[in-house]
Amino acid sequence: MTATCMAVYLDCAATTPLDPRVRDEMMLYFDAEFGNAGSRTHDFGRRAREAVETARDRVAAAIQVSRGGVFFTSGATESNNLALLGLRDRERRHIVVSSIEHHAVLEPVEELRRAGFEVTYVPPGEKGWVDAEAIAEALRPDTVVVAVMHANNETGILQPIGAIADGLGDHPALFHVDAAQTFGMRFEELRHPRIDTIAISGHKIHGPKGAGALLMRKRGGTRPALRPLTFGGGQERGLRPGTLPVPLIAGLGKAAELALAECAARTARCLAFRQELLHGLAPLHFAIHGDATRSLPHIVNLSVPGFDAETVIEAWKDWAAISDGAACTSASFTCSHVLSAMGLSEDRKEGAVRLSWCATTAMPNLDAMVKILRP
Image 1 (tube, rainbow, N blue to C red):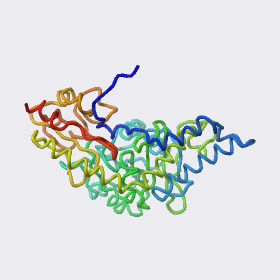
Image 2: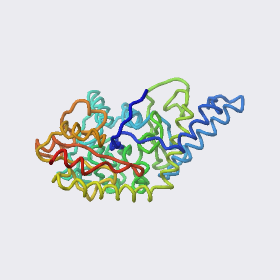
Image 3: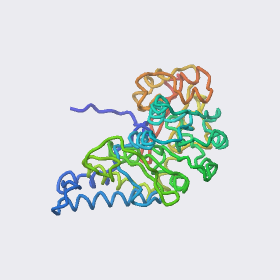
């Protein structure tokens, strides 16, 4: 028996609700069309393969990569690992990475550092974004990869990936972008031809958990040469072997198609929600962390003077389900490496909470949320 919860879900940066249209697409391949996409001797396998390739086309169309540049994975974490650890045998052994990356990037980079790679970490300014010129200045002749996320998962602040891509020019280093927070909402920047690899997740765009992709572009007629992390079976052209989860891949493809078609409308609704939310919470005299003019429309990271994050989360639990930062680290209630890199004061770091929503999110009782902290 499931308990009724009256709180409004405001943690869409962690995961989004599944779109019913995506669910319908997935159920077809769970139930009626349950074939293995690797089976080539009958129609069940053929139809499963067609579903996978349709999804591949839908994901590719969103950011204008070739269909052959879409490699299905379990999500952005695996995609980031493939893009980075897949470089481990390269002769060039220097990495440039922003210091505010998700741990799905920072930890593979640390693994490469332990294997003998040199790493230059580029910090953000106090507004939460790294400077494109600082990235360019960190390049060396032996730089093998530059990794900068499209938008930070804790603050929602967009990084200047277009300017970074321009600054890389004809340097041989690969440019990898973690787009877990932006794929489905910001397409144009991800279409920059100098971005070599992109990591995405389905569950951030109203698709299923457990499905994502590593997207690759050719440069000079050649895609990045990455080594697989696992072996056996040869699926996804040997880069990511294993039986393809057809229902999840079909769901990811449908979610990508819907996100592309509805992007403008979803963004407008998220912006309107943001304006109403911040207006309603204004009596708390909160501080927003990061440059609000560079923020995604559906994420805000803020602190309320005089309150730590745990207190705010507990006080608001009957009205809003919120986070103290990234979902993968929220259980620890420790200060964020992102906010620390931005140079925030200790009280603001300790009070930081993240509110994130989607186009279908209902507005919580803002008056009650204000009153419980400022009676």
